[in-house]
Image (tube, rainbow, N blue to C red; front, side, top):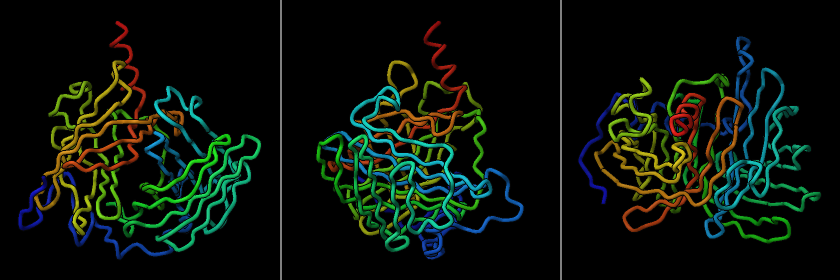
Length: 347
């Protein structure tokens, strides 16, 4: 069980995170305009980026959907796609439904728009509070309509141009004639005002992790495994160093949102040494509260978000003090880790 201590403690690994500041980007600094496209500076490079990430999960069906919108305003193009799957899938093409385009014309306004190539409609009903997304693919007999309502106000990430927000997703899915009710939670993600290059990185896997019970409890963090816990890549990469694996994170519990200052995390992998199957995690917040969690993946699919990276999208069941949370975990892999891990097991 988590415990309280009287005052927050600053850390080097998660600088600036306090209940009043939320990593330098307090909730109050997020404006309704951040829901929409931002001006592109004259000095912006070709990789200037905005993103909008949505989805939903239906745990009783081991089902998850990812809706990813990647805008390239300096180029006037966008990438967009829908990935929907049940259970453990070896490739994205083994999923129940995948439809993605790397090169599409970019809309001038993203308050309410339609992507004809996907049959996908996105409508902001109330900025930073609610939205509606619908898909119609009559040729393949797949459709859904989902309304998203914020379970919490959006939370700002450290760089000031990135937010996350736990959402209550309600609607219905038609999957090749099968009717499935959608009524659960999902962590949306929105970013703008920075360049996002597709350059390969000399890094071990990094995991984007979420877990939501309802509007009363959720967490989100981005972290490498802690080298002190002996991940199989330990000693092969110079970074991260022990105790410096956490990028950022928050915990919302008992009506209070706090920053996570430490994440003692280890990813459990399949026999190939690459594919994630679960997570052992202990988080510590700014007040010194320590909370152990164990996550088991129940649905999984690898997807090359771009060609130099593969992300394992994973519906994860979290056990926390006898309670259960569900969330989207994304284990992000670069070339060197996968190449070395695979070849070490072949020799």
